Amino acid sequence: MGATLHPARRRGGATCPGDRWFVDETYVRVAGAWRYVDRAVDQHRQVIDVSVSKRRNLAAATRFFEALLAGRERPPEITTDLAAVESQGVVYDQVRA
Image (cartoon, rainbow, N blue to C red; front, side, top):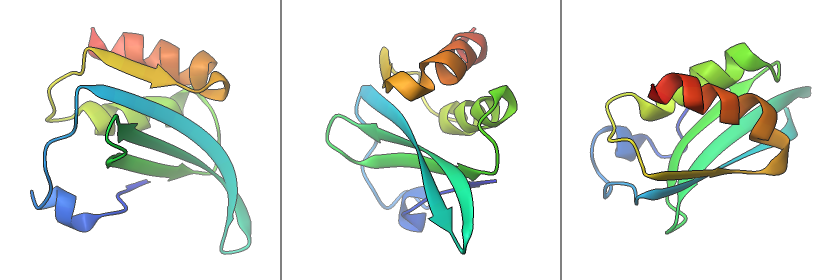
């Protein structure tokens, strides 16, 4: 259920992401319904991936990180915001193994 803000990036129209990624999470209203939005950006503020989900749980975080890391070189550093530490930090450890 992930979405990318810039479809050209999927076609290879943008530069490769940097080696430091920042992941944050927020709760926004989309078409009248509240949704969780996970977003990954690099140190140059280039958006790497965005995911929108109904729930904030381990399954949603796992899907986000699997999609984020699929087909990409693993960065040496991923920083999460404090809200995402419990779910996404654990998932990243599981996915990168």
